[in-house]
Figure 1 (cartoon, rainbow, N blue to C red):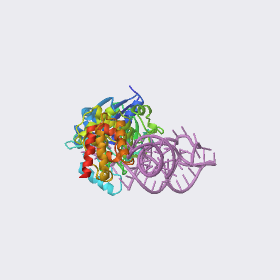
Figure 2: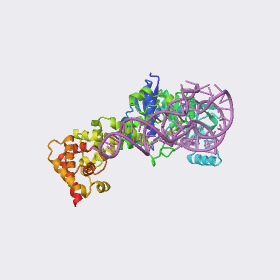
Figure 3: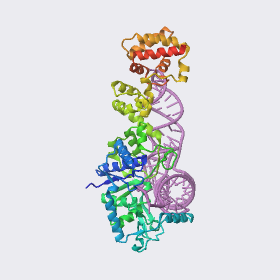
Figure 4: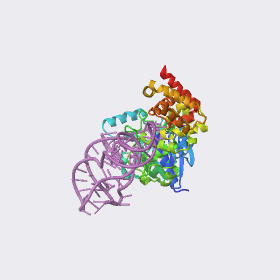
Length: 465
RNA sequence: GUCCCCAUCGUCUAGUCCGGCCAAGGACACCGCCCUUUCACGGCGGCGACGGGGGUUCAAAUCCCCCUGGGGACGCCA
């Protein structure tokens, strides 16, 4: 049995979002770092909102990120028998009770409490109902929370957090349809799976004292708890779909590399001295809970972009070429990984931040695009047309289409025309349609002599007409 | 409203646990300069923070209290 067993327990109600991904990453890294085990468990007890598509999306995202679970995925819907048994035990021992309050009644009471300025909570009116009173009526099972005393959450990151039991609710353990609720199953599962470290988002800190009470009621021993600060959106507050891209897949589809994503996420809330770039192996070697910060961090796209640019530069161009194909396809360009594509990638690698940008910048390699009007107005002027024609002529006579040959050909034309003709930018615009591009001679080489001559002649013709 | 958490450059953070090495370091972004056929890459430099107030101490970014600010939770969601 390993000393450390962590888990990631998402609910399959949507895509894996950034915050969840980081929680998974931290749990995984902590397990790896300590030689422990990392379990994936799908919390699908909300039958209404859970979907198989969401399960698949979560699995895909984790796999894409390279976060590999050692066990699972377990599904809570496969374990209902266990929860039922534990609920019955609590009932039999008097540690839980049946409550026949209806949802409507509860809502009304909650509203009244809020209006009175109290913390809305269950008032406990079914606590001492004789069991027969629930006969024939729909009921939920609630835990009997102590009215007095305190519950202390020993948090790995924050130290002891003290809660007054009087402020805690009699949580619903089993719904009226017989299905168990989150706070109940999470305890039963974490205990039965032998989870040693429950590491999760800060939003669960308030649940933890209630869960501790449940651990005690069930006679389980406590795991260690640690709560990570949340990731905020770019405008502050929770990540919102409106302002931020929240799903991992959204970033994959925009052309971010998984290693950029994990590197970005691991540095959100965690640091190792001044180091910014982490390979997975380095993360696994250095990750520790002591260096996880306590304050929330804001999601910052520019940083992610910078890291992605870094990893694109560092990546094998063969791999990038393969990844680029679908991004080209999105622009209607049918390309296949080829030595030529790899060369194209090489010219673009240090100029882009995402694969999407790379595809956009690569477009001119595949088809002639009309020059940007401003660029044309500045560089494709009537005065330059004769020089362009002359250059096209010179280039078309070349046998070897190499950088040095092209450069000499251009030089000959420039000298013939008095030595001070600025020719590079006009050619660039003629070939790529833009004023910014990879090196001119690299572009010419990849385009090939005939295409280069054709585009330069076409540009000259457009000027004259 | 009640409860809980948090607080170093615009942002991510190092430093905080074990006060002095911090006239606060790195990175992103931004601004200059250099390199250069353009753009980028790269190099060099600049801008820029301990939220406020009280303590404790010879000494506080570091410890304590209050305030302020930010966030989270209050479901038959997870």
